[in-house]
Structures are given as structure tokens and as C-alpha cells.
Amino acid sequence: MAQNIKHITHPIVLALILAIFSYSSQAHDHRQLKETNLTLYIHEFSGGPNATAAIVTGIPGKVWSYPSFGTIFLIDDPITTGLDMNSPEIARGQGIYVTSSLDGGKAHATVSVVFSDKKYNGSTLEIQGNSVQSSKIAEYAVVGGTGKFRFATGFVTLEVLFYDPTTFYSVSRCNFIVLHH
Image 1 (cartoon, helix red, strand yellow):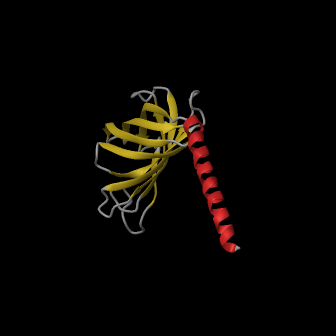
Image 2 (cartoon, rainbow, N blue to C red):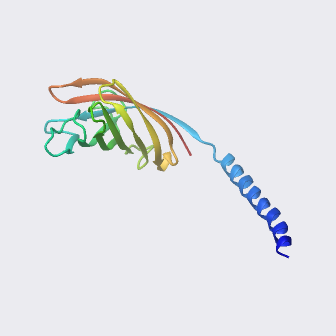
Image 3 (cartoon, helix red, strand yellow):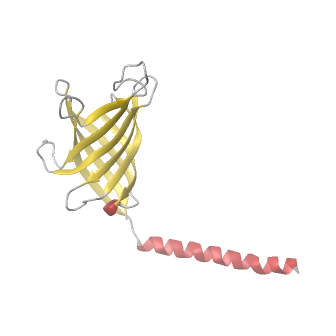
């Protein structure tokens, strides 16, 4: 008797699994991914009275600085549509950088790009990754998003265009390529 039940339930379970896969692939076909390409500019002041990046902690007894292992920084940088600081602000880059290699050459970043303009207001792109600190161009993964960028995946390159060591001001171009619903 138990053997008869196995023969009956096995085809039913198989049919249910096939039905679920068929439904999920049809549902996915109806929601095609969109590609969005954005070029934006992030402005950072890592010192002075208008600092948008700040060291918050590090390893006790060690110097806390960009090339010092274990140093943690917070950022809240304006992101604009143009290279000039007076260009319209479209978002803020808010997050954490940690000097993550013993030699101080690499940093791990977890940053939310929080949009404030009309088109993407309230949406976010979530960036995460590790990069060489002295590199002129860094690449990070886009690991998620909200609002207009729900289910985002992709990458962003950050290229340092300008750095003034006397004012601690830098501008980087951010090139986003993002797939989302």
C-alpha cells in the first residue's frame, strides 16, 4: 500500500515543481530589466570646517588616517550632475569606508547613494566593495537599490578628477551602469 502512495505522489510532486518553475519564468518575462547609465560627480571635503568625510575611530594606540589599518570613516558627500560644486545636487553619498588591509593600501566601502532630485527622489543605490586607495579609478559593485532602482545590480567606477591637499577637497566622476526593475 505504501508503495502505491509513492507512485502516486511522485508524479504529483514533479508536476507541481514544473508548474512553479513555469509560472516563475513567465512572471520574470513580463518584468524586463531596465538599464540606467548615470554620470554623476561626488564632492568630498575630508578636512576643514565643512568636512563631509570624517574619521570616527581606529585601532587604539595607532594613528588614525586613510593609510592606517582599521581606521573607519563616515561620509555624507554631495553628488551633483556636473563637475562644478555649484551644479545641481541630485543625491548624497552616505556611508562608511574602512581601511581594510594591513598595509593600509585598500579600503572597503559601503555607501548608499540617496537621491533627492525630482526623477529619482527617495530612491537609493547601494554600493559595496574593496579598492586600492592610491588608484585613480576604483570599481565597486551595485548590490541593491530602492524606489526607481528596486532590485538593482551593476557597477560603478569612481575616477578622481581633482584633489587639493591644502583644502582636502576632491571631485570624483561616478559612472553607474545599473540593471533594475
